[in-house]
Length: 108
Length: 114
Image (tube, rainbow over the protein chains, first blue to last red):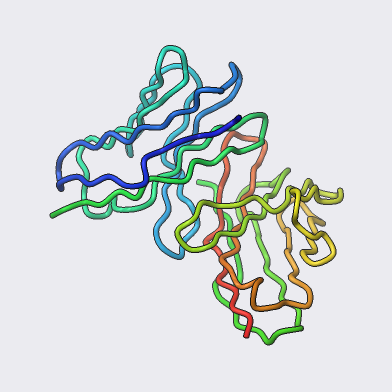
């Protein structure tokens, strides 16, 4: 079963780090892991992606477990603008397997 | 960065009419385009995948005669919802993939069939 599972929602305080988990226990060796986020009535926006090594960019960091069966999206200092639904996606040769998304709530 | 323009952003149509949604890659050539629909509080659901110049591949349960997809050029794909009914009301999103890595999504089209 090629599922990608995420918690339904998470809350965080503004200006604190946020760790969003994702399980992809049946991932194969060549599958990339993507994270996108979506605001209401908008298309998904790219956040980060990776294969095996941890990745950093100006938006976030992606920590990938050594066995690749899970990953964590890290927002180092959440702002109110980071409130969105975050999707973890497994890319299996252009077949995208979407998680149900985690709604991130940021408390001021 | 890569930009995908999707139009219209919202449309209201009468039951039985057809609606066309356009998806354009503005600054890159999209070898593959994807069409999704999304119901409230749910994840995106892939409807079909299209490669430029060839017929679209539809996901199981998606009627190809109802949801017509044309990908005639490397920068344009269209989705036509034919004989729309209220149950077709949804949020439709396109995504484009170029030769470089990554998927770029359009801003979505809210279709309401009355």
